[in-house]
Amino acid sequence: MTRTATDALLALVQSYFSDHLRRVRGASEHTVRAYRDTLRMFFVFLADRLGRSVADLRLNDVRADAVLAFLHHIESKRGNRAVTRNCRLAAIRGFTEHVLRHDITRAEQYGRILAIPTKRAVSRLVTYLEPEDVRAVIAAVDGHTTTSCRDRALLLLLYNTGARVSEALALRPRDLHLERPRQVRLYGKGGKERICPLWNETATALRTVVGNAGPDDTIFRSARSGQLTRDGAAYIVEKYVQRAAESSPALRRRRVTPHVLRHSCAVALLQAGVDVTVIRDYLGHASVATTSRYITTNLQMKREVLKAFWARSGLEHRSTPRWRPSSKLLAFLASL
Image (tube, helix red, strand yellow):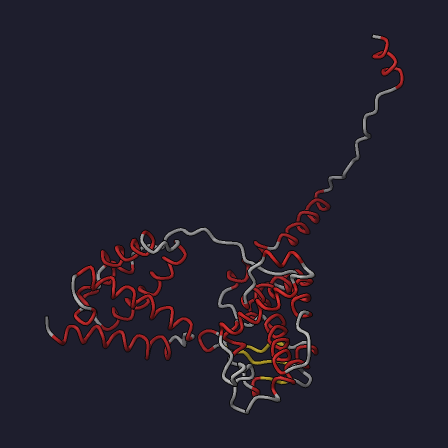
């Protein structure tokens, strides 16, 4: 095995992450980490399958049969579901497309990988909270300490804007305009920007947080003055959900994450009659198909549609009088 063959694979992995994912696609750090973990798992599996070290793998080893064996492994041995399997396949496909652009001599080999189909997966209903439940969670934040002010501002921002947790945690003072028109500039996937209006209550809560941040600091800080992490944000949400559950028992059975607040924002907008294309732009979705799944999960909207359909159909509800036995019938039965 030549050193050049092994170096070629390493060079393409490096260029895929440094140049293609980050610069060309503008992928988020979350996407980069997910793709990194998939390729690391695949290369370790491939090396074990071939009886070599990862350092000795070559481009010629990246074949469709190996990818299929890896996908079978993560389902049968690791217990991954079809959704996770498809995500792993998407990461390998992305890398394969990059390799194909730089190594056309193995086009047939890479084409077989790209032809591997995704597996049909059961789509789960979106989890969300009704507005009254979100109000209860936000109301559970009490006190005026630095921590409670930060927590209240974070919860309001996530629900008000439907921001992804990564977008919220990356905010800096320059991204906020807290005077009229109150708004925030969010930086989403692929480097896309969008501006969302802010409620007066959200702007007021953010003012208390911005005052504690430097001009280049992120506004949501941890107790140790570092940037608040995704795990930290998840802990904050769960903390106040548990508090709110004391007065709202329905919350006790719910697993609520920062992303559930994003879903809750989307459903509330739908319930308010906002057009789905406007919600797509509000949330920063690339496709309206992604936004449309909230319609599927919202039972209240389905009830309203059914009610409107019944009224439109022209069928009137006629109440049938309840049958009651006459006194003569009872007298006859008694005489038997």
